[in-house]
Length: 84
Image 1 (cartoon, helix red, strand yellow):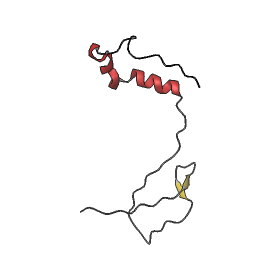
Image 2 (cartoon, helix red, strand yellow):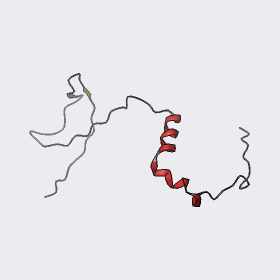
Image 3 (cartoon, one colour):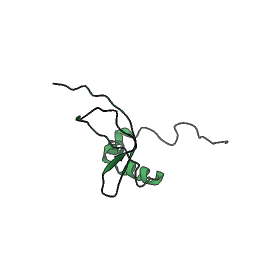
């Protein structure tokens, strides 16, 4: 049997014992089974160089190394000189 669920959004704080404390009461009457999704900021931002290194070494792009994919030469296109 499929259960229809209603979504609400609220905020809270995780304490040093890893327990969640909500900033406001939930609009749920009585005991109820719920699903919880926790969103939190990442500890470290990844800089552009790290993203480029990850993309360059990702095996998902290995097909680009095949000779059949090498279809352009330096003679193709026109140079772009940014005037800004």
